[in-house]
Image (cartoon, rainbow, N blue to C red; front, side, top):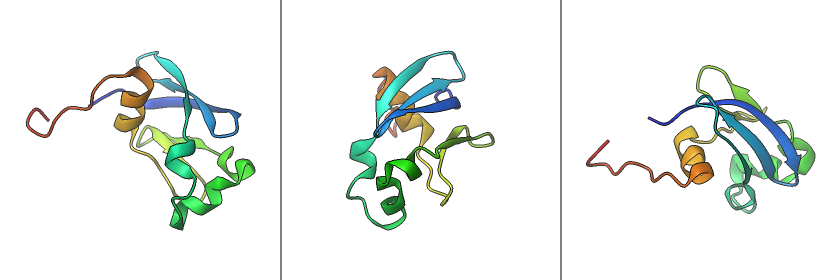
Length: 90
């Protein structure tokens, strides 16, 4: 299990500045995770709504008012380039 997210700030467009519990931080552009996904992701296409992102303190991940959240392990992997563990090593 990778570190969880402890803080987030909207930078611009679909870019978020994310701070992880181990002190690492990164700016991530989540456009590819949000745009044209449809369903519960549709409200997040509006930048004003997208900017309402927060950290769920229990799950340690990003969450929006409509309940959408993203896997913190995937976000950490993307932010740091650390490969996700394979199912055989997990």
